[in-house]
Amino acid sequence: MTVGSVSNDELVQRFPGEPITHDNAAHYRGRLHRQLLVNRCDDCGVWHAPPKPVCPECWSSSVTATQVSGNGTIFMNVFLHQGPPAPGVDYSTPYPVVTVELDEQVGLRFTATVAEASNDQIQIGKRVRLDWRERSGSPMPVFVLAGDSE
Amino acid sequence: MSGPARRGMKDQVAIAGASTTGFVAHNLERTQASLAAEACIDVLRKCGLTAADVDGLCGSWPNVEIMQSTLGLPAITWSGNPVIPMVDHFATAAAAVHAGLCEVALVYHAAYRSAWNTSSSLKDPFRRIATPGLTDPHTGPETVAAAVGYTAWASRYMYEYGVTSEDFGLVAINGRTNAAHNPAAAMRDPMTMDDYLNSRMIRWPLRLLDMDVPVDGGDAFVITTTERARDLALPPVLINAAVLGQVQHNEEDQTVGLRHHGQQVVIDTLKRKSDFWIDDIDVYFPYDGFTPITLNWIDNAGWCKPGEAGDFLREHWDAATGRALISGHVPINPHGGSLSEGATQASGHVREAVHQLQGVAGDRQVPDARRALITAGGFFFNAQGLTLHRA
Image 1 (cartoon, rainbow over the protein chains, first blue to last red):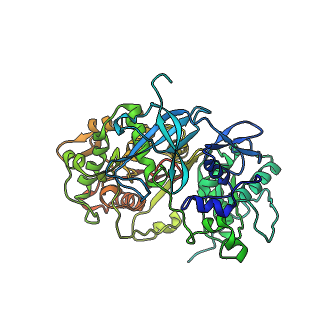
Image 2: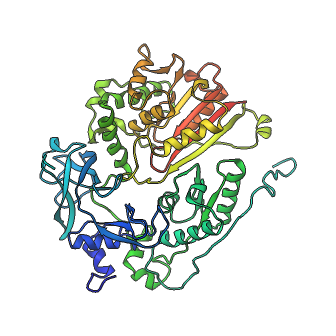
Image 3: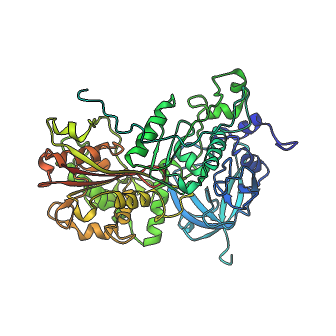
């Protein structure tokens, strides 16, 4: 744990309901700084998600939560007509949830919602970039559609 | 019990190595998965084994899907999470090895100071979250884990193969037509494609009628030796092969692709271990907790090319009865499946297979049914297969 980072107790309070563990705490601390952190092996360089205590590829125990660009391509998409209660989520307009394949590595994916797009624009294959919104006073990663030029 | 003691496993299975992390009576800044992984990696290295050598996984906590993903085990054909104490795990893993369900079983356990064990554990916010029943997480909607997983992969299936909702609808209609002849089924009213398409959208692209129906009810089975079964009242149904298939990257959003998940392990293993395959069977039971699971089982089992399961159902559709009959005589989930009989997590599929092979399936009886294929479960960490036949 780095000096100046929030305590474990504060971290849990900042993200109520999130399944925070010793393995993924660094990822959530990154969210507080609006950084999307994904575990990467210090020895073999392979990225893996969700966070794991060892590298599943080479069994190194030296893994570091590392910032990703957040640029990627929509791999799967759903639109929730109903779902768990969440601040600011109104299912009267179906709520988009996408799994995005990140540019850092083939098969490395992150799941979030898409902000500021009409649902008919949210399609598999579309390019997205990372952005942040507030939920319950803490930053939440979201994707926004990237320009066609990307 | 009767007759001489059965000791078929005697001296047939061994423990090849054992490792420990050591134990401390204070809270480590680590997860249970971290502790289990350390011991697992150490024992495998001491035995000179790699991840690819392990095809069986058995432990207490964390569960096997977390441990397979953590250790990056490429493919396993058997796994189990028996209840503690641990002799259950050793006995079950040994039996699995002896029976040929797997060859190298990795058995693990991680002791962990739960929040209810000590006051210092209770003060650890992560241990409070990790202790079941205490402060269970309630995540927001930004996930495709659990029930949303098959919906997400349904979107991928439609995208990769250019198919529409009607392909999913055929699975639902087939189940409902069959359930009409099953007095045990919960949902027996006929269903049309319009009924299906007009059912409430729950999570696009899946509707209410794409999902199995929650029910109350039970199934039970007697399993014994074939020899003993021959002396009992009903015809024995023999287990020809069984597999619990699982691959690395088993989280819902990290699964590699529609052609690379637990179902491929199940199919490849059954083809290697079973004495019969799809051309030889009389009745087929693909799991149908969500309709896209069924289409993928049909694709992956090799009934048709990838993405063509909907066309396969259309090609083998019996218009007179409103259901699929493969080659005019092999029904698919003749009891109605989880979609219409009820969500039994495949106990209904196995029970109906047994009844069909025993010739006691009533109005649904397939004439002289001798061989059944059951492909149960989904993609991520519960794909399973069973071939059954009448003695």
